[in-house]
Length: 87
Image (cartoon, rainbow, N blue to C red; front, side, top):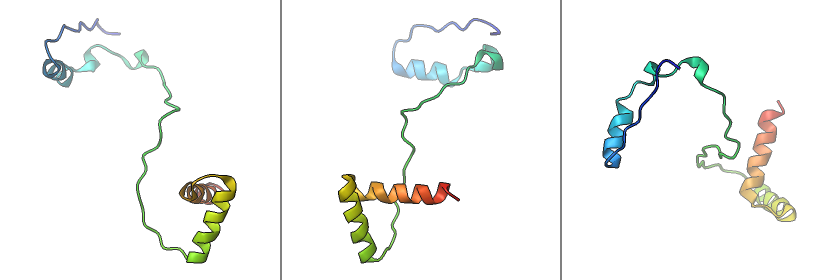
């Protein structure tokens, strides 16, 4: 640590936002001050897509999902993940 950071008392959120927006943390911290962290409970960002598949295939997927007691879209995502990561 280069020097001690003194955080003032803020009157409101705008004042606090201004403080953090204009602060250069490189004046206070060195790379050795950081430690690796993990956020295991974060869900990855998802994006909706549109895909056309034959109706018979969709019906079979829905049957399989019903047997597994999971939503059919979740099953489709699992199938895609298996296909992508097994290559």
